[in-house]
Image (cartoon, rainbow, N blue to C red; front, side, top):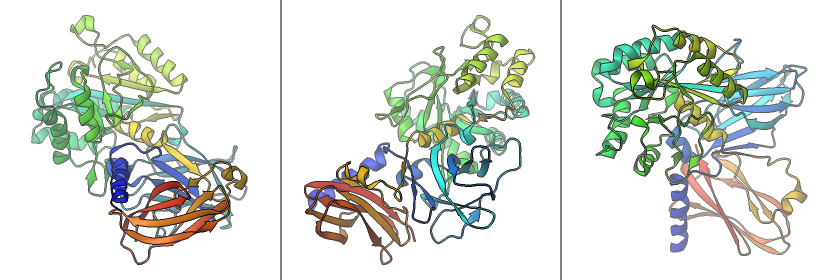
Length: 487
């Protein structure tokens, strides 16, 4: 028993402190409902309020289609409405592609549930079958992503930031502010709060004091302290919070400097990105770093500051042909165009900033997004699994040997099903449920079984809400999974 408790500690700790192989799980139940689940600890760590876009093919939409959703089993179904706009962004909505019999459902998770339930009906209230295709690379299946950031937000630069932000908002562009919080007064925080409330602006960490190259001194104060300053002095918008939890997803490294300590603190603070400033220009997604538990540091695609020949420093360019052609190149390949600037040196009296913003803005097939939400979406989109637990091919399953599947639904109230594969005849099968302290809650099965596919129902009506572990032993094979009971 002690060994099992130790295993549970290691098992649950690995869930808490490392990236799960799959953050999002999509399943279908026997009622043709789609169940989308997020790993509970990742839900706590990152919120995932931002709507992900799920692509489905539909059996028949000749008689119309309506999508319904809810977030727990006892809830009533709500209609998820389509938005009658040529262009929309970051909304929970449905888009129908009637030519290709496709439906794109954009929806985020709620703070009180790790699950989203979806179903489809036609205009006669008859069930339609949704067949999952993918979580699209970009929101609403857009062709490319565009993000921008502005460095050195503090009281001394507030007036110039006001100009830059106003000009970006004029073109409906999103902007992440790199904040140096030791330079923030109450008036400056109020200024930033008003900009956050527009929905187009994100607050990012840029350290407290903007230390010189490799001169951090107190790393924790600079990074963790700056994040805490932001959360304590600002009210995060809806898509940057989940219940009482607030999130800061972006770190922008002063002078483009980073090291292992910085990356480790970024991961510990559950920030997802470390955006650098150097001329190794980048136009895609960075890879995940398992050691720091954040994405590898990466730099911008273009900086439209004045060039180094004019400033004596930096990586900017005022060559409009260079800026526009790079944007066209990135978007043609479906990449990420990351523009940045320093508002304190921006040349709004010149023509090139205006020409470039005009060139990149207000395109209905492009995803305009803040830096943090870009990587929050990507974190989920790059780590999902689809498990069709209804129409599994038995012969294929049996050829995969011993298998334990995620329970469905999950979370559940009060019943759920646990499916598993027994590959050999005359196997001793033992299925038990434990709480997180290793105490046995129930024995669901303990008998010999022939080769086959089985599912067993677990009823938790007499238990408290929480996380439980189920263990399957088939002869010498062992497997464990976690499930969440929500009353």
